[in-house]
Image (cartoon, rainbow, N blue to C red; front, side, top):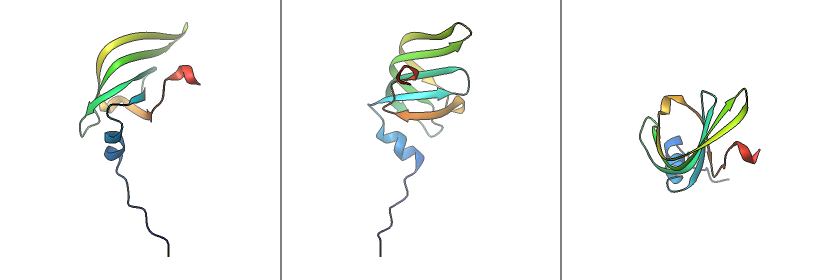
Length: 88
């Protein structure tokens, strides 16, 4: 008989990413990479040492930000350890 693996809740996975690099894809044409410093039950996130990527008609534009607060309602995908669209 195989042992059952305990379920992992989504917020537990996000919690394991605190202090680590994360790649966040938004509902808009923006993406962010940075070090996750914290989040709440709505998955609002604080990132530090942030790279902001925006897809425009001219191509990919990259900006650096010291810190940012992202609204969890606009987050589509989280990629732990991801370094952004430049890795594709």
